[in-house]
Amino acid sequence: MGFREKYAELGERYERIDGPLERFFDPLRRKAAGYAAGRVLEIGVGTGFMLPYYPEDIELHAIDAVPEMLEVAKKKAKELGLNASFYVMDAERLEFSDESFDTVVSAFVFCTVPNPENAMKEIHRVLKPGGRVILLEHTKSDCRLLNWLFLKPLDVLLGFLLEDNTLRETHLLARNYFEIEHDESHYRGIVRLLVGRKV
Image (cartoon, rainbow, N blue to C red):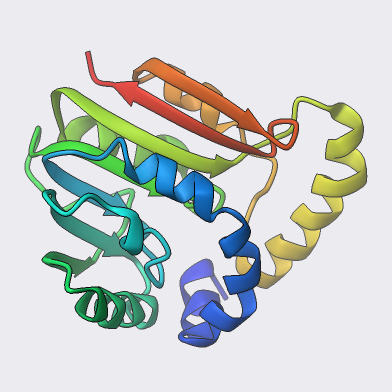
């Protein structure tokens, strides 16, 4: 069973299971959303944890590979009065034209994407020149001890449950595609907020 099937099984229950932990990250989500402008694409919107924080004047498009999660996000957007469009779509195969977005947002998605490099290439492709990518991601820690004592066991558990990978170095991958303007590390690098620009 792949990540799509595992997340599909959770559906609306994901909010109750992951909600308490995700609310812990709300200040970072709010900060990340503050960088969004213009025509915005959020990849891996999930159940819509980012939706309450986007500026009102953006044109929001959001994708997720799991239809059951996307339905929850749609309901949330309606309750919030957001003007947003939602699509069932794979982050590694974006069905948008080249250079069609001013901003692309990814919040805790790259730990789940099967091939992160493909997803990063797609983000680069759909961004306009000068456009921004905003990455709020779980990453491998700067502390080796923390990796072994905490992240490695968590990686085994989440890998089994949700196909998640907590030891990826998305912050380094992003540097291969974008000029990083802002790099913020939290909890010894377990969570990072990066803002990059397509040159």
